[in-house]
Structure formats: structure tokens, C-alpha cells
Image (cartoon, rainbow, N blue to C red; front, side, top):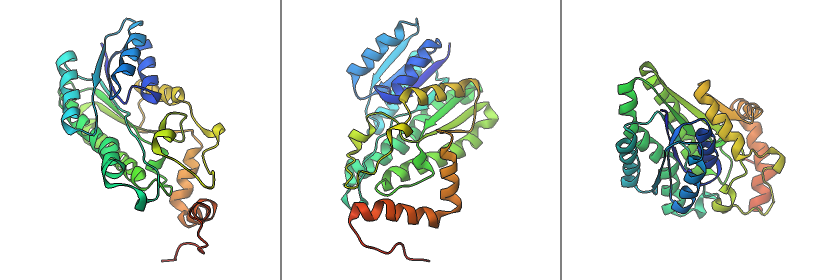
Length: 271
């Protein structure tokens, strides 16, 4: 029986992945801070005849990350699929972010916790010579917008971790994949504290549903890939950001930064 461990499973993408995985007949270990939501999700998933282990944990606490891994290993003997989905954002100008939750907390949950949890479950995957690690990152792993400085730093880091780990463990028959969605209709915006003077935001027609991301994630188990960018046209924006950064800087400065800050700057200094 395949065992799937999903972090951040109480809502959004994580909950969507859990439901689809249960439909496929996978046993689940689901973890998040909100136990009531985990228990409700457990009842939904158990309808499909699968075993569901709920673990209340806060990924900001290193010892609780270790507790997740140990609890799952004790209950199931190992993890076949680890989906590092939990993450959050604090969106504001860097000088306004506090050093606690907004900076250290984002780095811990979005980057350090996935590294710690992966390290805990990896030995059993290596021993079995099989496994799949999927990291749910963001389009901000490639394109860093203003007011997302720390969030983007954590997601750029997660992308680098995913790439390096893939190369480390491929010889053991272990797959490592990254999922990089653009805007998703979840609770992210409300929790991130996004307030725009300019009202610049991702249009609703461009936003993915949590179910779309969940489906793309589970498809990786049938057809492993290094990375999935969602929606596909975002690959063009990644290309533009990589090969025409001056143009992107100019567009972002005039279309967002000056309007949001209320500056009358003439643009970025040339170096």
C-alpha cells in the first residue's frame, strides 16, 4: 500500500491532494496546525477505505517537524510519497516586515521545514530504493516580485533544494519533483496581509483552483517530471524574466512600484 505524507493539508492545495490521493486508494498521513480541519478531512478520505493518520503540528517548531516524521514512520513503517505543501507568505516592503514570523517564520516553514522533514524520511526511501518527494513551491521560485522579497527568497531556496536533491538521490530510484503554480484561489492572500493602494493583483481569470494544482501534483506519481509550471504559459514569463531582466524591471517599476510607493523615481540605476 502506498503511503502519502502531506503537509499543510488542512485546506487549499494540501486538502485537494489528500482527497484525490484517497480516491486513488493511497493511505494518508496529513498534518497541519488546525486539528479540527484535519479530522474533518480524515472522515472525507476514509470513505474510500484508506487509512488516514492525522498529526497536529506547527512547522515553525523544529521538534514538531521531527515528531511528524517519527509518528508516520512508527505508524506506517515508511513514506512512499512526501508532498511538502505547507507554506505561507507575509507580503510587504522589506523594511516593514518583522524579524519574527514575517522573516524567520517564512524561511522556516517554506524552506527549512521541507528540508528537515525530507531528511527524516529519506533514509527509509533509500533503503527501499524507491520513493517520490514533491515540493510545492511557486512561480516566485523563478520571478521575484516586489513586496515578496522574503517569500521569494524561501521559494528560490526550495527550488534549489529540489534540484540538488533530485541529483543526489536519482541513483536510488527516488524521484524528486517541483510544482510551481502561479496565483491560486486559496487563503494565501488573506493570510499574507496583501493591501494594494494601486489595486494591482492577479486577475481572477488567471488564478488556478486548488483542485487544478492538486490534480497536476498527483499526476506526477504516474508520470514523474522534474518540474511542473502552472499554468503552462507562465514558462514564457520565466523566460522573459531570465533573458530580459531590464525590461521586466522597467515594467514592474512603472506598473507597480511607483504607483504603490507613490514615488516619482526615474527607474533603477544602471550598473
